[in-house]
Amino acid sequence: MMKKKVLVTGATRGIGRSIAAGLLRDGYTVYGTGTHRSEERSKGLFDLAGVVWIDVDFAERVSVREFLKRISEVGPFYGLVNNAGV
Image 1: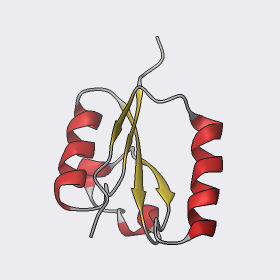
Image 2: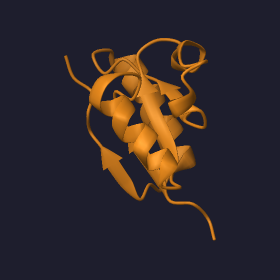
Image 3: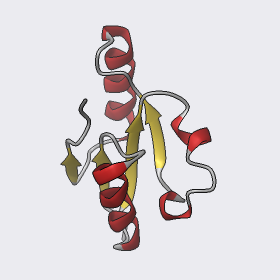
């Protein structure tokens, strides 16, 4: 059986990080977003080991287009946690 995929925006810290870590513990495949070098910055954060990182800046159109293309290639997703914000 294939693991269910969940997309968590803003997964690099705070509430998003906690949610992503909990979903990983519960056996989901987690795709997380961050704005810059998320995969590199998350090294050593053992609670996030296994997150598939997708960098995106939701304030930049080109970045959003690239993000949408990427998630369309890896979807469909079982769930979305829309947590990114400033």
